[in-house]
Length: 222
Image 1: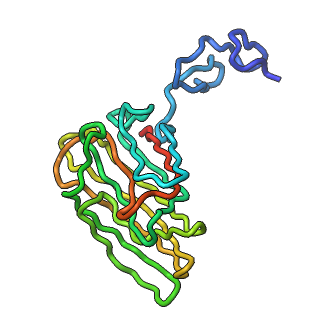
Image 2: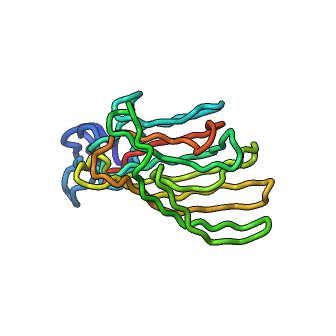
Image 3: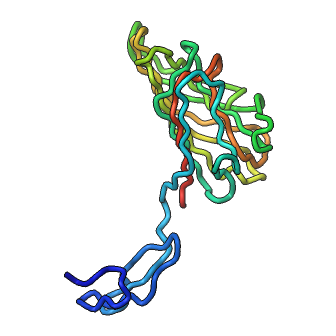
């Protein structure tokens, strides 16, 4: 044993811990024969902000800066929202993302430019197509509403607090429909075509409510 890590007088082979660190620092070596130190954590960490879950018919799900412990501002240069087990009430409808510039009082419902490459396999055909959209920052296709037709997505939001740039995101989605026997992955990107900072976003389906879904927002330390 080399002593108790973290004790001030750690004298059995690993040297003296000269001081305790501060919040967010990590315990590191400063070199052979030297006291250990504390340094800022390296970049790249995924910092959990908030998880939300829908278990019955709900119109939408939003993440608004300053509301219900959500952070969506200049704290991080990149935010990522991970969606799991999403299913609509209405069969065959598309996932949508709309932004807010006034902490959720209103959402932008037009003025987007969105394109996505979609590949699907199963049923009667295999195809490679392009989706476009003007009322959402994200363009997916047909999420099924059967209990075994759960979809998922990962959406990346770079620097939403930058007021001099066009808000944009990039994403990966997958949806499946057992009654039509297909799997459909989608990769794309979208933007709002006016330079502005934004402080929140809303997840919804093009038609009808959300039947179930889990979404987790992370801030990335870069």
